[in-house]
Length: 118
Image (tube, rainbow, N blue to C red; front, side, top):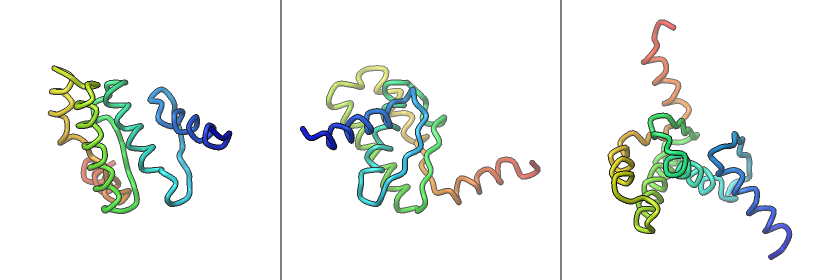
């Protein structure tokens, strides 16, 4: 494996680590969405963070819908692979409606609606 490929793999592992804070910047087509989906799934599966406690925002409604679908598909795949079983799978499956990935605009609007006076 080339040094560049190995560095990329290490950076992706670090970026998806639920114990780290990261800022992800990269050009179009480099796999940002894949990394963010993996990070989201690791937060839910490994760190057991409830989806309602995860803020995921993007720029367009299309990107938000695509990311949400990828998260759902990846969680289902993890279940099929045996990473999510029994009671934990039921908890995650019941939390599907709480998986909210929105645009920056929608997130700001939700804040204004929730805290109109503040």
